[in-house]
Length: 322
Image 1 (cartoon, helix red, strand yellow):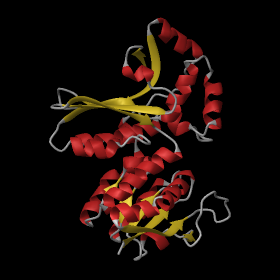
Image 2 (image 1 turned 45 degrees about the vertical axis):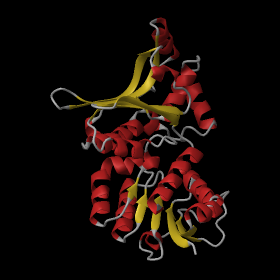
Image 3 (image 1 turned 180 degrees about the vertical axis):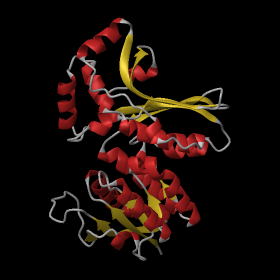
Image 4 (image 1 turned 90 degrees about the horizontal axis):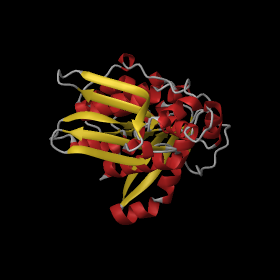
């Protein structure tokens, strides 16, 4: 006899819809491999009239968050609220935890701003909190870092974590103007209509805060990071870097120096053409983690897209259940 796992989802946008698809597609596999029956009990939506290419027959759709986070029939809550206000997301997640639901999060901005409160709520209510989808798209970097830093001292973490900026700079390195590259990114679904948080470095700064909290156990105030925008770069800047044997990439960097002080940077940076980051193009990300004992490790994969993100959310779901 299968054990039933009842799921509530907050948000049915691009990622939320793909998560629903993945759960439905893997129902039989979950029964065979784990002896569980996955049931989506309810989904919180913002626009009941919006047309969606996802099957929701038999699932309760509601515009009231409480119908999900306070529902006693839901065991696990998956947050895919996207661009909705961070305060609302934080309140929904904490309410779900306080109502004894395990939670899977994707909102990086919310975690960067309120991660300390959210993790504390999970601990106080003895619930699992999984956040793989918040950083790195399809790269399982969060769970890897939490695992590898148990007996390790992580001193440095750096790389590329914003797929939109990397896609744009890749195009600009191929002689596109910033405006042409941005238009191309939007056409390919790799940039929002308002891409400010991506191109101005805020998205990468949010992810830096999350990763530092996970691997260094330190809280970085987002206001202490001064990200540098890529919007002022020109094709001439890219050519000048090439003449020096370098290539401009959107870098993030966090390091604990010899004085035990945190040093952070987010923005475009000219790396050597031989640097591994020089070969990370389009929507791919690459994250390096340097430990006292394990040395330097690298993690590479797609940094954006509904399918990679939904995939790591589903992995989080299976990890909670197991």
